[in-house]
Image 1 (cartoon, rainbow, N blue to C red):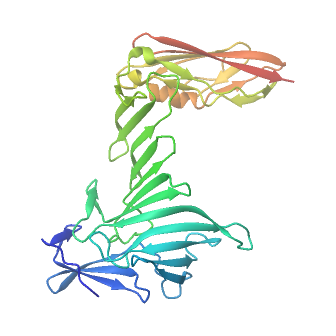
Image 2 (image 1 turned 135 degrees about the vertical axis):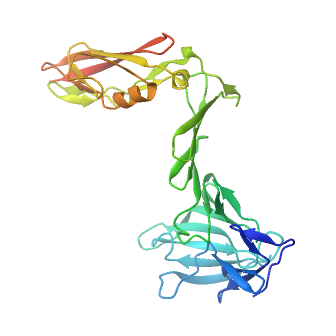
Image 3 (image 1 turned 90 degrees about the vertical axis):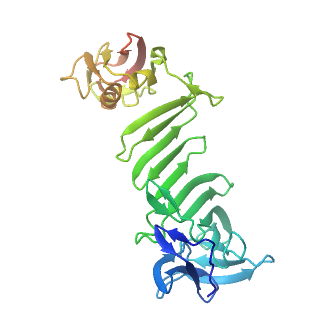
Length: 346
C-alpha cells in the first residue's frame, strides 16, 4: 500500500494530515484512502467507485489492462439491472493514482434478452488530490463527477464529500444543464442559482437568478444574445398566454399558463394592477372574491403570477365563442393587454 506524500503537508476537511495510504482490493481498485497525522489515522475517504461489498449484487468481470497501464473492468448490477458499465481506473501519474476510478461508461441492453448494448452516457470522476479538498458554501468536497449523455454533451456535475456518512447518495452540490444554455445549481437541497436561456420576444435572451442559503432570490441579471448585460426598463412589460383549449358549454377549464413578464417591476417596489374579463362566461381566481365576469386585483408581480396560475374560466350554457381579456398595469403606469379566445362546444 504505497504512500502519496505531498510537500508541504495539507488538510482534508480542515484536518491536518501528513501522510496518506491507498487501500486497494484484489483487482487493484482503490477503495479507501487512509489519512494520518504522524502515527495516528485521522480520516478515511471511501472513494467513488463500484467496489462490490460482501453479499452485494455487484459483479466484476473482464478486467483489461490498457497500453498506458490503465485498466477497465465491466460491472453489472449497479446503475441498471438491464445494462452494465465499463469502469476505467487510473495509473500512477502527476494527476491520477493507480487504481482510482476516472471514468464510467454506462450501457443498456437493446432487448429484454440482453442482446447487444448501447452507450447511454458516461461519467468522468476527478478525485481531489491529497490535501486539495475544496469548499462550496463552507461545506467541503473532495470528488467531482461530470456527467455526459451518449452524444458527449455535458448534462450535469456533482460534487461529493467522501468523508460524509451520506456519501455517495447525497452530493454536496449538483449542477444540471438543459441543453439549450440553461442550468440549475443546488447546494444540498437548496436552489442557489439558475439560468433560463432561449427567451424570445424580449430585448434579452437569458436571465440568471441567484438565491441565498435559504432559497430567497437575491439578484437577477439579464443578458442579450451577445452576452452583454441588459438593464430592464419599465417598458419591458409583456404577457405570456397559453394556447386556448376548447371547453364544453356549462363546464370549466383552467387558464393556467398566463405569465406577466416584467423584470423591471420585479426589481422595484410597489404593486401592479391586474384586470381580467370574460365576454360571456365567468372567472374565478385566488385573490379575487367569488365568480364574476370581471376580476380586479393588485399586488407584487410574483403574487399576481401565483394568482394567475389558479385562474379558471366557467363557460356559459350555450355553445359559441368567448374572449378573455387580460390587462396589466405596472408601477410606472405602463399597460399591456392580451386576449385568449375560447371555443365553447355543445
